[in-house]
Length: 93
Image (cartoon, rainbow, N blue to C red; front, side, top):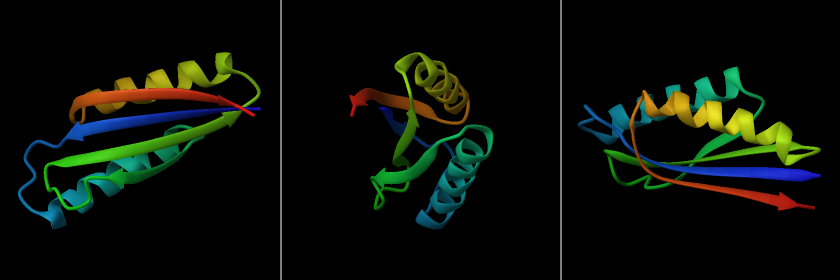
């Protein structure tokens, strides 16, 4: 079993309050979950209104299955926000 873990540190443009940020993050997470077979959550920067840290996880039998899915998801989020940092890790269990 292989677990792919992707962390995306994002800068959100045009967000001026925590309330606006919650709406934007909620839409980003819903899009990730609806279009891809992943689990996704905001895992950091909850108190900053123009930054968010999104964590995404996917379980499969091999890295070859996980890698293209996480790459497409990352590319899609590039259009929604400025990507500050990306961390990708594979856990072989």
